[in-house]
Image (cartoon, rainbow, N blue to C red):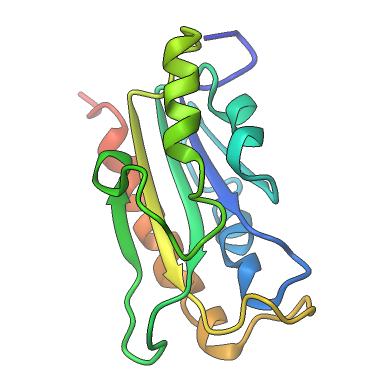
Length: 160
C-alpha cells in the first residue's frame, strides 16, 4: 500500500446528473468527516475497469450504490459481500465487471482488497436527468449512512 492511500475506502458510486443514481454519492457526502482516521471516503461516477485505481492498495472497501428492485415499494437497503455477488448480472451498471476487475488485479498481483462489501440502495428513477433525487430515495440517506458507519466500525480495531 502506498503512503498516499488508507487501508479502508468507502466509495460512493453514481451519477449526480441522473436523479436517484446519485444516491451512492450523496451517502458518501454525508459520511465525509464523520469516520475515524484510516478511513477514506470518496465518490466517483466511474465503473468497471476504471475502479481498478480506486481499489489498489486497499485492505477493505465499502461500495455504496443504487439498485433497481422489481418493485420499489417495500424494497430494502441490501448488504452484500463481493463473494456473494460474484459475477452475477446486476441491475446496477457499477457492479458489472467487478468480478473481472478482481481477477485482473489478482493476475497482475495488484493486491485486490481482502474484503469488499456492497451497500445497495433501492431506487425508482435512475435515468431521468435531474440533480434532485426522488423524495422516497432521499429519505433513505440517513439509514444508508448509518449502515455504512456500522460496516466500517466492524472493520476497525477495538480500542483497548
